[in-house]
Image 1: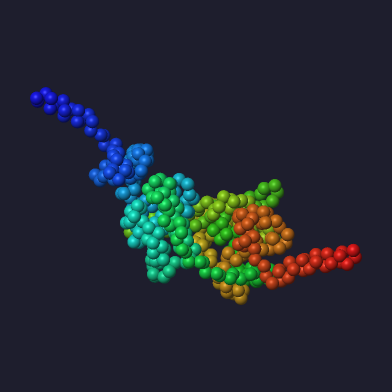
Image 2 (image 1 turned 135 degrees about the horizontal axis):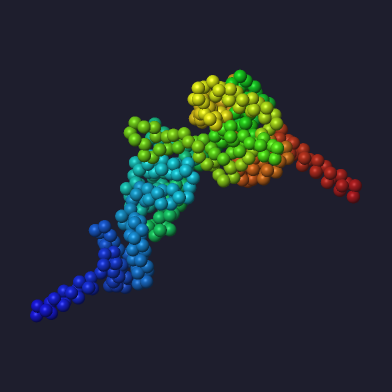
Amino acid sequence: MDKGNDLIDKHRKRSRRSNHEGSVVKRKDGRFQASVMVNGKRIYHYSWKKSDCFDWLAGIRIKIMQNEPITDDVTVYEWGQHYIDVYAEKFVRPSTLANYRYYLERHIAPSMIANIKLSKLTADHVQMFVNGLRRLDNGQELKAHTIRNIWQFLSGMLERAVDNGLMTRNVAANTKLRKPDAKKRPILTENDVQKLIHAADGHKWKIGIEILVEGLRISELLALRHSSIITEDGIRCMNITQALKRQYISHAAPGQPKTKLCLAEPKTDSSIRKVPILPSITERLDKHMEMQLEEASHSYGLYQKDPFIIGSDLGDMIDQGTFRDFFIKVAEKAGLPTVRPHDLRHFAASQMIRQGASPVGAGRVLGDLPQTTLNVYCQESVSGKLDALMKLNSVTETSLTQLTTA
């Protein structure tokens, strides 16, 4: 008798399922139920097809082997961390990755959706989160484009959760966002630009305003160093391969700065380019660089070996805000108080197109796609619109003359 019981016990031990193997049974309502124990908790999946349940179990086993979170265990914040570490860190630019970490830690982590499980997250949750986005320093509502950036990050990570089988659908897909405030930027004329340049007379950063007239972004200007000025095919060029940005430090120690200045990749792949230096400023740029080298010779070795063209007294990098403050003072002195550095990029695009440059050529100078150059940067004054209509007028008159002659 005892021997028989021993055999039964051995059989039971052999038939016992291994950890994370799970089981599939048919319910009374005709559906199949798959279940598996994960981290001390049993989770379930239901389907009218038995094969779906086995597929689900197989997927769970793979996630466990790869140490990926399981649907019933992971919250929005936990998935955000996993998404950044496993996916974003490998495939997005460092500056974008820093923004993602900032959005997660500074906006999602303290929000009401942070601890909601992915399987329980609804479209209403996301909409309320977006509606409640505020600046942490003063409680004011964030700008529309910043809210859109945070939403795009959240939507992107939820879309990956759907792809991984952690959610049935992306509940952020149809979130209603506030439209950006329509801002009318000033349309600069050639005379306005000349006023700006003359107002900067006597300042060492005047050359920066002249370079911006070629359509560079302020981040690209401030990343230019002496080594960035090259000669190719006998033409002096600015070799734009980096951009100066302020990035968020996600793991800064208490009392330490939360951001840092760093050189990063430019905004897009097309932003990496060589821009010929206008003959009108080549000589002044050379004199500016010679002046910096003269200052370096008297700095007792403290000057940067490869100084930034627009830099500090020792040739080091400066913050974008510092240059903007200088620019705003110059603009006010020139009688153009509403003008900002980026307006010169609009001026460059509009002038190139107006003078007959193709959208492709202008886009390559600016480091943007042709359609972006046309739709975003090209602005026309009333006089420019009149010139365009006069060309139409000449075509109309020619057609009428031909008809009358016929």
